[in-house]
Length: 87
Image 1 (cartoon, one colour):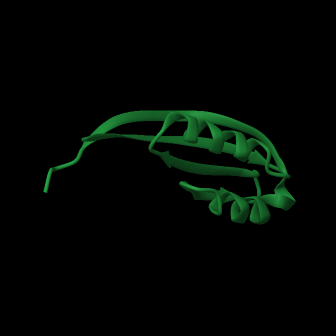
Image 2: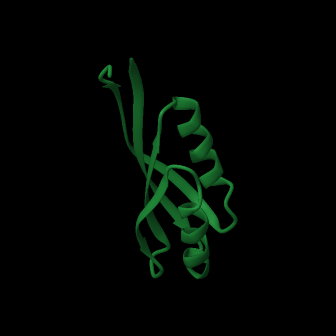
């Protein structure tokens, strides 16, 4: 059986004073990891993983809706099929 694996990276622009709060909220979203955050610039680099494209899109939409987020840019997306070995 093959499963689909998807990953994307986002650059998130947030209000400077809200970066710590935004980072914490994003880290709590399913499959979401804040790789880098910079309070001075308000930029965060976020990696999102999912097994379905709709889950990935829903998470990206959730990132956009976090209070303090000004903009979200998709930088990278990869999709791959992962084969599972039979027991």
